[in-house]
Length: 423
Image 1 (cartoon, helix red, strand yellow):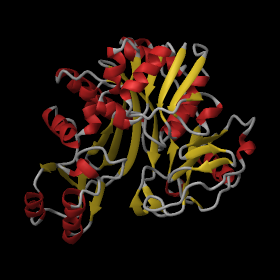
Image 2 (tube, rainbow, N blue to C red):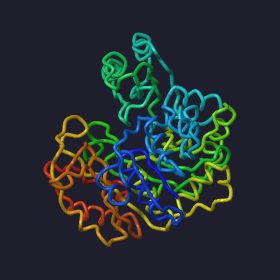
Image 3 (tube, rainbow, N blue to C red):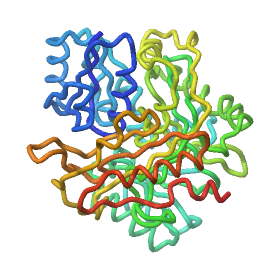
Image 4 (cartoon, one colour):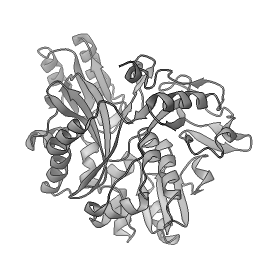
């Protein structure tokens, strides 16, 4: 079968690598792709938001399955466009992708269906938000309602910070139209865990757990990013915690979406906080997390195409989702200055060190092939992933492999997974 993957980051490279293992697949295309994806797929210069061009390409190349990796095209309705053109597509339709597209919607859904989450209020007027903050308990969390590349969340420790946050989100529109509405949320404490899941509209099968590191600097300092590294599994996500989440969060979320006339097919990402009062939802995403996919997918034993087709066909209950009994750690190599100002076009070296190694992965995110070779083309450049018998071994191997890739301005965190090992 012919497969089209829409996107061009580390997540899409991880998906492409999994798709390439399927015996069902004869040809992989990726739009727009990147220099790493180009080694296993034919990259085509079509942007992820060019819906008509993507549909036309899919029809022309007789695509059997389109996989939409990114949030913007999902929320914008690319799956709807594909299906309207007779193309099978993996991912939620627009009316279901709103689970990620609007934080106000997801919070209201959780309140209506008694799914545990932080207490909250929503605002579309900055003055009203500022008045509310005068009586609110600090610290507090401010969230731009719409999509903001994973950066539209501000944790404010003081009233002054919170007021500045309202200005950033609602008045200065630092996150664009995503800040037209804002959610003000209770600050929760506990262990954070990410759980990805496959969903077919009625059945949910969860993948192995993971944990992301969002802050740019060591010790969880600096600005929020799209993710500086991750590991899988989380030792704090026990069988007991999983049983609670299945009963109070996972199945109720799928049932709630169906009850609202928004059946969800695709991947739901559950961002969880393991609080003293039990697991609660921090956020939903309507697709694979990035870089979570870079540690979860290398551990998946199933044929990813078979699982995705089961989600589309409503037969996920017949799938036995399996993951290897090991661990994986991903360390993101970024461009110095990310996530604010950084330079592109820096020549990269060392990729050949990964050749022939099935326990090391270099997932390209912001890269580009040029006459000079592969160069940097984004803030997050590559994700270096390694698997090992446990987190300690996987972490040591991942950091060893970060030394193999070199480029001017290479930046990374040095503490991915360190706190877990200390704990």
